[in-house]
Length: 447
Ligand SMILES: [Zn+2]
Image (spheres, rainbow, N blue to C red):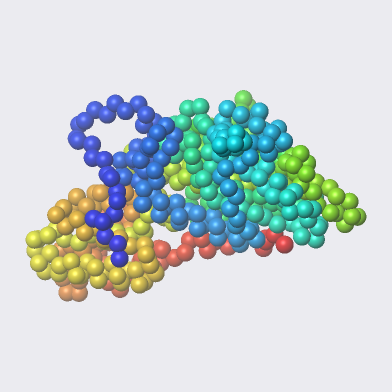
């Protein structure tokens, strides 16, 4: 059982009416994450992720992990420090040079803190010797920190210099196979975003510096976004907004909304395998370059983008599946009639029952008893715990009843439901059922 009084959460309290002149806070997710004690900046574009935000990230990683494994992905870990020589061979050292964080070892050998790992994967495949076509296709992926020396880091975790990312790579004998796997991984992406209840759009995108033949960006509409989407009101076709404001499908006008890129996927062809000599032995015994696909999701960016998209200026709203704790239990103020009537034991017993009823390791007790219920209710709403359970006056009735508040996007807590213990447990159980369990539209597993 966890208690809020013991959580390391350096909340920033801004006095009423204070004029805030920080020019560095440029969007609401950055402000809320800082003020609610979830992240702390260390220097420009670098952040310490504090325990409650770390829990949200771990939950998101678990969803991504489970959706990738379901389509046959295999997790590995590549070093963050990667040889600059590989990037020289792929030709990207010059192309995105200024954005690379470069380091040198004591012998003068040049490295970089990888912003992505196409070269490292191609080098791994070259290093193990030519694979046989019989071993293909497969998907390798990792979730870890990446680095980009942003010219102007801004919006907190939305454009940071160190960020956590999913990067997956699919390896194939042909372009056709790569394209097939591409649609399977796209389906896994849809499942990830569906389980977060986020309206992420897949839109066709230029392949840019990454190269390859096909590419999509995965975009989440939000006011602070630096990209723009053209959404057709008639057929709901969505595209990156460019000069033309008419829908390419039906020719009608579109609405343009700001959005945040949370993922990017590519069919790469032999863009990296050729220069790095990652070959396989084909059926006719010739040695030819592998075909590759690559898939990224900005994990820390998605956390802040979802807060950006769901929250009000005053209160965080998380996708339910990744809130740091699913439920918080608030007991009476010390010394009150309720405190004397049912005390702290009752509060702990309620929390324990919720945990045993499917909320394992996902319930926290707000044991700051010197504060009133109202004050703690307000703070819980600001933190955006999806379910807030209050053991207050009605817990003195026979049978005891409890107040259940749900945090709804941007609103103050609505009037609570007053429930006895059985109703409370049943309601929470129904609501917290594993949301990842969304069926695929078709059976799709690589291999
Ligand atoms: Zn249209």
